Every structure is written in structure tokens, then in C-alpha cells.
Image 1 (tube, rainbow, N blue to C red):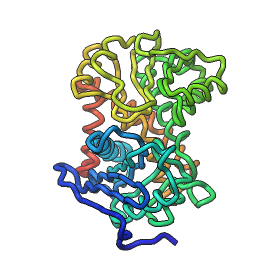
Image 2 (cartoon, rainbow, N blue to C red):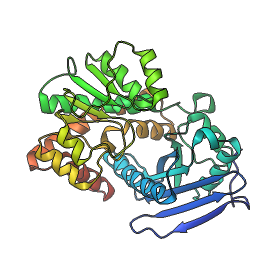
Image 3 (spheres, rainbow, N blue to C red):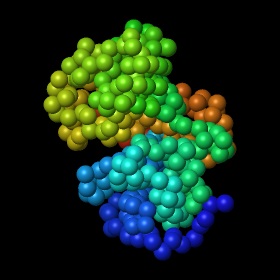
Image 4 (cartoon, rainbow, N blue to C red):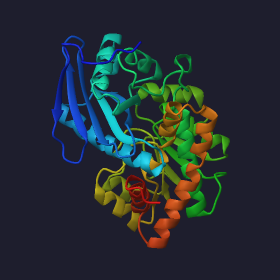
Length: 354
């Protein structure tokens, strides 16, 4: 049974005053090496749900910046998808290969439990469904568990299905084409990116990939020796650029070199700054907001919490195609960007407007 109540005496939790956020806390546990931050951005629609990222940030400031951006993105992701959830995110600072232990994960579970259900965690970069089972030993506020533990399993394929639906909508709206013969450049072929490649190939698309992480690159080459792997995708002759690695790949420099007509991928926080959105718009490159394109994983986890099946979740994920079509039509009608149109839809949800 998960433990609840006060954290153990070795946990040091501090609440930070961060304007615009419901609750941001840091945590250290010297006995396990845990250093973590949980950011709850907004809970107007329901408890904040977001994954735990285990990553070797260079310092605490970088981790705090990332968790804040990710947390806010989850608020808009849930609202745009029409889910009764708020936005939150967590980061554990360090290299998971060196630091991840059952003791650290149990300690982290106590940190999650200190939010009394206002934050529910799931898997993200550096964490797995199996890790969530261990975290779940000290808190019940976990989602995205393995099937053996009563969940619906890893959400990577569901995230990829959502991205596929978004790409399908964008190519239809922008290029008036189906996915057959569309040239897609996928940057990052980890858990989600590799699933997306398989789905794109099944749909008849032509795929080229970029992967800078050597182990992931080797795994992909073994699975797909027939597909080209390039060092850079921005100047590649593709119709769609699909960023599926870490965020901030869209910079003023990369957008200036971009040859794709559409940007749509699974990565979070794809824009390096607010000015990049305007640059994409001026170049008539359609950017599907990341928090809409990658909502499939969140939809799956929400379905698990609501007692629905994976089949039911996947049906809802496929309907993201209609969500994206609505966003693109609204943007065209208003003469605005897809990002602005998506924000309006999310804001309507956050403020209870039909």
C-alpha cells in the first residue's frame, strides 16, 4: 500500500514564490541523492498532471527554468485537448544512469505525496512505467503504470499517434495532400520518435531522420538500415520537420535555414523564444503548437485515471486531427498564427467558455 502523510525526516522540501504558478517546491534528500523540483502551474480544471523528467541539468537554475516552461505547457495541453486536468511537471536533477535507485524513487514518491493529490506524476525523459511502480510505493498519485500494475502501459505510441494525427491535419490543410509521398524529417528517434517513424512509413510517407545521441542512433540503424540518417534536418528538402528530441530546436538561425512547409513534432517547448513564432509566420511555415501535437500521451494517462481503456484513449487521440484542423482554420480566418488560435481555444477551456 502506498504510504501517505508527512515525508520522512531526511527529505528537505522548500516552497518557492514563483508568480503565475500555483505551487513550486524543491526537494533534497541527502540519504538518497534526490534533488528534484515540482511545479504546479494551474489547477482550475483539475489536478495537475505531468511527467517526471530525470535529466543531468547543468545547474538548479536551468532545471527550474525547464520545469516552469514544461508545467505551463501542460496547462495549455490539457485545456486544448478538453481534459479535466491542470498543468504540472517535475524534474529530478542528475544522470539517471548513475543516480537512479529504488531508494531515490521512493524518496521522490514522498515528495510527490506532499502535494496531497494536487500533482499527479507520470513518466517522461529518463523515467519509465517501471519506475512509476517504485514511485507508487510511497504515493498513490501516479499515472501511466504498466499493464501488470493496473495501468495501460507506456504512452510513447499514443504520443506518436497524436503527432501523426496533427501532421495529417497540417498536410491536408497546408498542402492539400494525404501523407502518402510526403517527405518528413524526424529529429530524435527515441521512444516517441521511433514510434512516429513507424507510423509515418505505414502511412506511405518518405522519412529521413537526425539523431545525435549515439545509442539511440545505433538502435535506430539496426531497426531501419534502409532509412537515411543525416547530421542536420533544417536545410533538408522535406515537407514536414518533426522535432522529437529536446526543446528549443527552433531558433532564429534554424528557422532561417528551414526548407519545410510544416513544423509538427513531439518535442516540448520547441521555440527558443517568442520571436521565433513570428519568424515562422513571416516565412509562411505552419507550426502546429507542440502542446497540441504531443497531447496523445496525456490523453492516454487521463483515460487511465478515468477508468477508460487504451482503445477508447486511442480513439480520442485520433480526433486530435480535427482539433488541429480547427486551429489552422481559425488562424487562417483571423489572419493570426496557429499558436494564437490554439491559445484562444485553451483559454476558452480554462475560463469555462464554450
